[in-house]
Amino acid sequence: MIRSLAYAAVFYVLTLLMLVVFSWLLLAPRSWAMAALSWHGRVCTWLLEVICGTRLEVRGRENLPEGACLVVSKHQSTWDTFALIPLLRDPAIVLKEELKWIPLYGWFCVKFEHILVERSRASVSLKKLVADAKLRAAAGREIVIFPEGTRQAPGAAPDYKPGYVALYEALQVPCVPVALNSGLFWPRRKLMRYPGTIVVEFLEPIAPGVPRATFRRMVEERIEGACSRLIDEAVASAQPPPYILDLKQDQKGNI
Image (cartoon, rainbow, N blue to C red; front, side, top):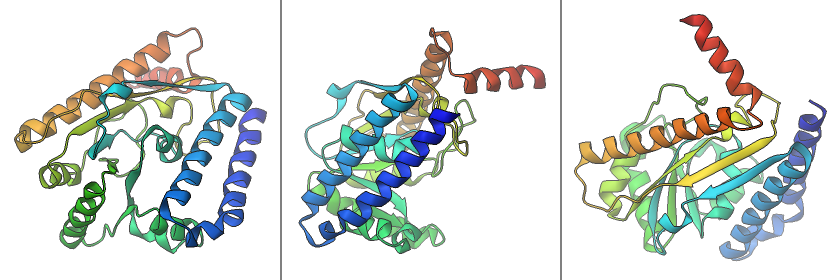
């Protein structure tokens, strides 16, 4: 708990300081701002290992194409929102539009040219999502989307929204599914940070042109299958995270 509290304090203070100290980047080239964003992700990932003993392992980097692609990632933790950024060249992340009204943070989301979506207007939002994503892909950027729209606990039933399918059909670029186990070590809505190894795995890319139903099945099966494997690996490790052991015990008690 002490280590978790220490990391939380350092993480939020560092993030706030960066937003203030580097606010001048709002007037600089976007590439400078993106470099600072990537640096923030690397530093916060490093601090998590130093303070809490939570390491990072990346698998399947060779599956990322050199040009534009669609990255469809599992979302289990706040960790995903900053730690994935340094692993990519120039990501444009699909986010909810209301974030842009947060002082400094939201302004930087606009500066980064992320893709901001108003979720309350489904049909209009989908058209804007596709249009903005086409512009970012034309610039050679990775389009990153968390298809479930919000963080899901490890092992929870998947709830994939159709937006990523629309992007796949419209962009005509390779799709790289991403599996991870971050929620085991940085659980959603909890302060605790557990020691161990967060694994991010870039899975085999899916070429453009696959029929809609087949594509959706391939993405969900690959991500969910790989995430289940990563959970099993963590449970079988020399230092299993208490979070997943408690979860499995609860599941057994409910049977």
